[in-house]
Amino acid sequence: MRTRRFISCFACIFALGVSTLGAQESSSRGDVSAPVSGPSLALRDALGAACSHDEVAFKKFLSARNAESFSRLTVSARTELMKRFVLLSDPGKPAMSANPAGRPTVSCATPFGTAEIQLGGADTRDAIAFIPVDLREASDPDTGAAHHILFGMVREDGQWKVLSIGLLLLDLPSLEIEWDQAEISSSEQQALESLKAIARAIETYRRSYARIPESLLKLNAPQKGEPTPEAAGLLGIELASGRKNGYTFRYVIVGANDVGAPAQYELSATPSIYGRTGKTSFFRDTSGAIHAGDHQGAIGSNLDPKVN
Image (cartoon, rainbow, N blue to C red; front, side, top):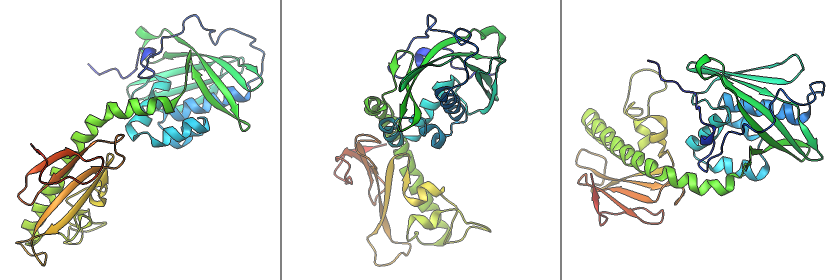
């Protein structure tokens, strides 16, 4: 049975939780003859960007304060926010249309489901607008009941931005730390695995070329042709550049005057932004043992406790 990817509970919209708003105005209510307004078009395009996980386009519909925080979130947190706007966990292809009354409609089609999003008439008052939205999974008739959601929009510097979803203000600065803390454990585990992957690549390079590489960049994939000592094809571009998943990796050759076979090396992995992308610093000593400790973002040492 194929796994369904539609997020059926709108209470999942943020870590803080929001209920579906069945009592809110549905998109089928209101003055159907009213023209589509600026906030409706802005919300339509924001939902389209969220559908395709286009974070550059999506960011344009966030207030300046939220956009700044959005930029600081990890990639996975930014994606998580966007996909919860359309209640689909996979990136989709958005299609814009209008119903017979001229109301904007967004269809978000993914390989695992399609969301149909119908916008109602905007209730605009000065710089604030409220737009009722009906959202349903069109590809599954068994779960086709609509979620009724009221989006709030605010005009900022002449442009309409997303203000709230239901009764919850979109306040990314207050959620930044909470989301970062939730991801720290995963980021630290990935950093440990990446450190081990770098060490394996270095040892493979040593066996292949009877020496260790002068830098991690030597482990990158060749642009074309077969692997060479200058581009051994042993690491992806991120690890070879020394940065991945919120961690910075350093490689230092020690214990020899050249890079011959007897040369030894040390590896370290430190959080790029301490307290947000991680707290633990990892250190691989010349014997191959890996140590871990909290150094407030500084490089660890062989005096730290060993980890597996």
